[in-house]
Image 1 (cartoon, each protein chain N blue to C red):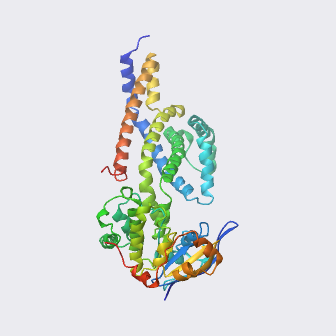
Image 2 (cartoon, one colour; image 1 turned 60 degrees about the vertical axis):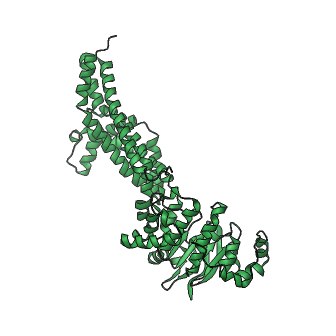
Image 3 (cartoon, helix red, strand yellow; image 1 turned 135 degrees about the horizontal axis):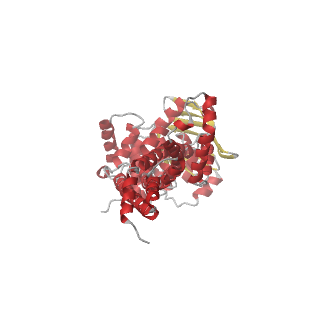
Length: 236
Length: 264
């Protein structure tokens, strides 16, 4: 079997144009994961009544389901259930007018929230609880303690793990083609279909994924180093 | 003059009553040492006094302003109590993300909105007192346990509490570091700071305390001057507990002399 380099390059060129879509979906999902994940992790950390157990159950439910299923279920819900619901609510928007990118973002966002919650919970547990007592004992409120003591110590622990999550989101974003979004993966598939050079197209798009992931890994490492520089024991 | 008065403090965890009505009067400038076997509720009692634990019942008067009943305590009183007390913990609990100086400034800057330069001046003064001035820019992880505890004392003193609470401040330290911390505590006591110390350092209690309280099983068994408790305990339980310790007797007149600060 011959490997057609020309076709591979062609696939890279045509799919790289959709890199923006892949990155947009992944980054927006990551931001959702960080914001909501932090909020839920804090609710659970401080054992807030009602909300804490509710989110614990939700986290467990979504953690146990493959992302593919979330994509399929959500797409099915939107394609069949959205219009009747919108009609009954009196909204003017219909399913056809929804950019499928939002369905993809919601799916990956769910995955990011579930992971983000767990990441923050892990990071919080690396902070000695006695420091919270200490903060309270000198008159700090809960919000002040979160801002001044908990987050400054938890964030450096969380950053590399979030880098990892971003990598996973980028790879999972290949599932977006299932809901009709054209990302780098489906663009490469389309390009491969045109000349029956599937292997070349897949290798080409893999190279793009590798390059992006390597960049993110490097960036997260630098960020981590910058954040923890003062917490390391001085070598002296 | 009474600085703090606690009457009938009770604390339960579920059905388990940890504190069964503890009362204590603390004079302004007095050093109270609480001794007793582990599990007797000493630490819980101390934590109740700055609301790290919520007591279920009891009255609490602190300084000139706080008068409250724990069974229906309001947010305003809660804030007053946490603001007028400070605590030194067994395992120091310095903020790992801040330098020594920032640790001491934090209680002034964040909850009390003291301007940074003013807070810094106070913090440096406190660090000087505990002999940690030259470590001001270091992080807790770079210090020994004894040094961390001295910083923790400075952090607690910086907010000028009416009542300074020590929860077994030397229990987590290597034996050779205990002396430094006790010396600093003596010095704090000599400056007239009102303090309650939960401790297993009987020698320290004997030499520094104005009042020694023996707690067991969630109640105050006996309290009095160090001489009364250590030399002439009235209760059998106190005698039994003290027989576990070798405490060198001191002549009465040397007690006060020993309180001279030894710190350079």
